[in-house]
Length: 125
Image (cartoon, rainbow, N blue to C red; front, side):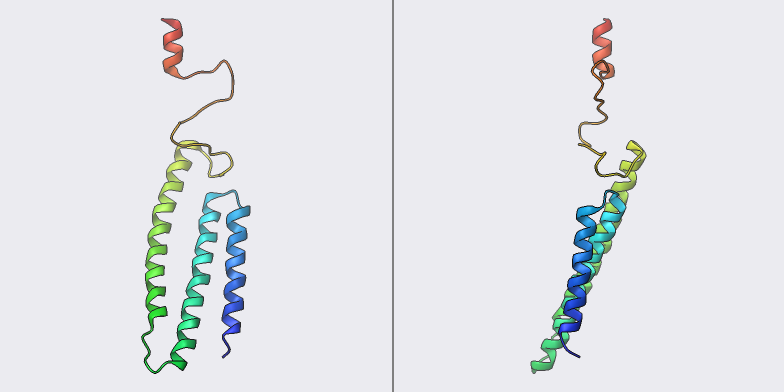
């Protein structure tokens, strides 16, 4: 099998994942697109490992070992990322990335008369 077939498939998968990261607004779909990009890299690693093992006298299978490492890192990333998305969804009520501003500042409103509870307490005291 030629190296061009998995390389082209990997490029298509990576471009699809990149489009998903740049165009999607839902945080879970962005995480799925990142996983698609990581799978494209895994496909490239295995394809080049097989291609290089045919030409080399020693077969180290380093591409397959890196692929297993990447799969383990991706599983941890999805677990933590999904936990963060669920926590944000519970607090904010949406998983839309455009509607989420800075999570460190908390809930801010754009209404001029609405302030925080501390500001209202100081105003009435």
